[in-house]
Image 1 (cartoon, rainbow, N blue to C red):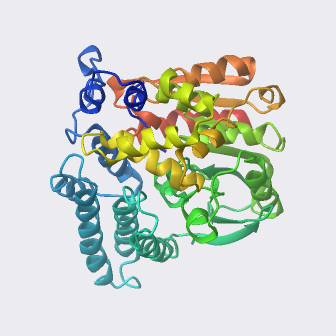
Image 2: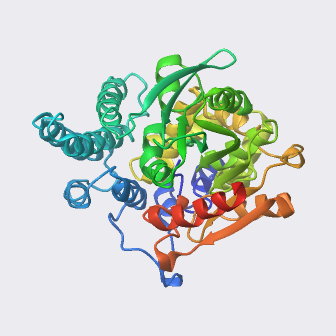
Image 3: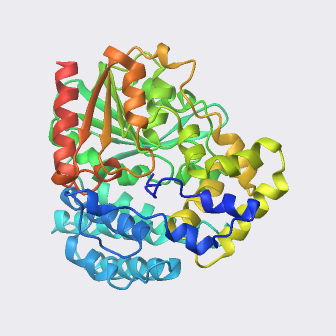
Length: 440
């Protein structure tokens, strides 16, 4: 999940309700990230802060075969700030070009070349889909996903130890998962991985999975309700009870002879930095948990973005007014990319057309009353320039007390963005060294 937008992002929605003299455009555009105060600020890849983050997200997969820098930068140059269609076109065209290149490679003769091209193809088709979720009837949401799944499946079949797609049974839903084996003999430590608000399990292989396998451990990625494949093909939005997703994955991992059941970790990425600790409060077979980045209350994080004025409209119970305010802002072309995308993705991933109901659902996502049930050690990652969940990682670490290892990733190291995007090698070194120490 990215949701890296500036603090109080949705306060402009509130101004509509109260007749604030500022126009939406004025108020939205007064909310800017102040890089002048951050000596480690990163070169911006787009004047649109949200597109900068999206492009950086794709670039950040390059160390572990998920993209190539030059071709991404060429695509980035075709993207017009605030133009969702130009974002789609740039990455879809890139995906098509890489698809053609991959198709021309004889995978039996050049398996590594074919695999790397296929991985990149999958990444670019996922990226092309990213800003399309405002229209649930857009057929590209499904056609692009089919392309990325096909390319990724072909790629993992060419790994030295081929990846294995499995489906696991949850309570009323199916959990798609992928097992990536270390290829080493005997039962191995294993990291379970889930993404967050908007990310696919396929992305997790490049974000951290390959780094785990390089260290002689297994990886199992998975998705639950609200996440890309389950949302598309089962029509299910997020559920608060994330342990109902994680426990079947732990059951599966523990059943495999190549998994050391005493050395299973759980990595939650972005919104997964809330979901993983939530699951760990109920699933006690985990040797360690990684909250990257840590979130204590997703509910509070969203409430902080909406601000007190729109919160007051919600508390009044006036669903019509609440939805009208949000809809009017979304329809205004001056509304920043970050606000439009966040609401559209929220409605999509929670499977509701009502912003009021989405907000109502979000209020359930807090560790209040259950954090004391977490028994496993937790690595709590934080990012210095994370502009959406600022402060949440520290709260999580403080609430966990001695169970937490808190680590702040700094902007001067290129690791200050949400989930330290762009610093995959550094963050893997820090977190996986910690995990290996925990299980040793």
